[in-house]
Length: 479
Image (cartoon, rainbow, N blue to C red):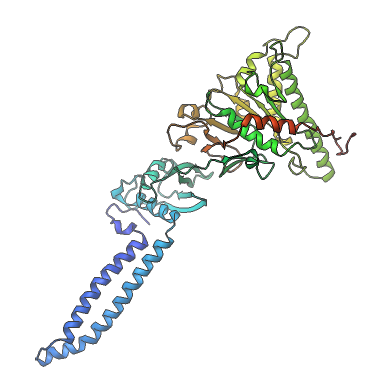
């Protein structure tokens, strides 16, 4: 199909509308034919020639009337069937085709007479979320990417006004652009009455909301950014509760929480905070021990791989994920002296940064992850090097703003996200798990129970019985 600046709206009407138009015209023709038929059978004209013509036309008019009536019924039935089967995906597809090809709607792609119209296809990706694919023809990929606001505008109909483009991605070959369209008024957040309802079905999966989760088999460590009262700590706790609910494995899995502020988290069991003298030697030792656990778990996986003759992943070895959560990362860094003290050369900022780099860049293969929490999205000023930022492949920004989002993601990735006033628990989210590569809006679980009490209880249960260590060959060293 080619662009025609003089085309009529009928060309871009749905088959249902075209069927109704055909049925309406046929119905008018049927009425006229039937009227002529009635005149013919009631005619009293005496002239022989005219009477013969009327007698001959009467059966033809009768048959024509019957055929026309059948056509009207078929058209009405087709229009009804089309309406019943006119899914939102089909409606989105027709609206976008009309927006692109109908000149009176603005010609958003700037097409010229005779240029090919892009191919448009829409299908339902999941419940209430649609995938619209537009293939380039006479247009460039850049022009298709800039079409996002126009698509959202053309969906402003009675049934589709709640839908808008939330994401867009161009394929590697730059032949087409895929848009994700969803109902922006639907809330997908999880509302849980007790901690057992929050537990994920798989140890490798962390639920964010009912249509979004983090797959630890394909994603890495987590950057959690957000100002005070944005719901940052509660969001992290909702993730840790799920990890703790699965219990500890037999290969030294850990859930290590670092609270340098000595705030609410520091009152919980097994949480590491400042020493009694205000120093952070205990924090440094805990991070060092966590880094050492990565080495041990990786050695276990290497031994299993050698025995099997193929790579063994941590989840196939029945390992549970380990997590190191550093709350208020910037505050943690300021505690350590920049230069080592005499007699204690290991206690310095360089040691902290070295261990942090080690666990962030090397831990995922052994099922060991880091959650780094920062108050400001301007991570460079916050003391988070670019290398570490890149290694944190799951990124979350609580109560997001466009300016903060640009400091974490490329501007193109967040251009389609709705600009509105966000509340505590709202976030922008992305992960390199092959599903959530594009930045999307999420809302972390609403937990209607005493969060810190349950976190403390699960930490106690998690560390209640430390399993005996295993040798690299998989046998226990003792009871």
